[in-house]
Length: 181
Image (cartoon, rainbow, N blue to C red; front, side, top):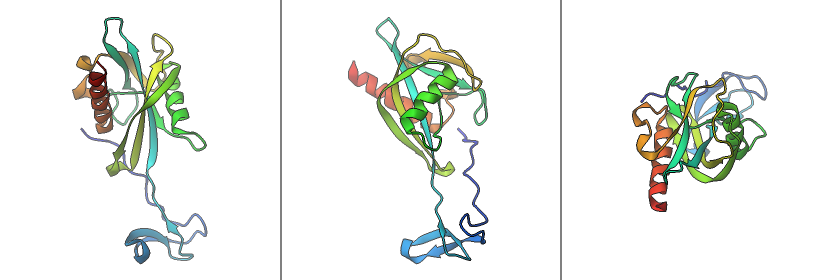
């Protein structure tokens, strides 16, 4: 499974003074950092945050189901993932998860708890996944989704999941569901 997401590019110039920035060892932090050669400002490169909601419902047959969407956009176009996306400035992870659910699958959601936090260190992303109760019955696809479908634990398309973080989150969901039965 490839990621197809690259970490953000390193800055070349200081956002404070405009001076050149380069990698150098910072003794106090015992590691290399991007440092402005003019003003000495250390430029920290922090991960980007993704928030996702895993909508759940009872299927009427005693089996719980989760809603996954097939991505319409790269990276990983055509692969399955829960609705989710990057957290905007001024937005909490909870707000972002709810917004993404509405945008991508057209369902109002109620977050019911944190499923897990998954690091994608190679691409500088931290994924925060919440469990959610779907407040509507059927999804309405947004422009970022090719398809949305409810899956039982046994029917999850494991070979067609978009990201390793998606695999880990769904494994955690399956484990939690088995404990509840």
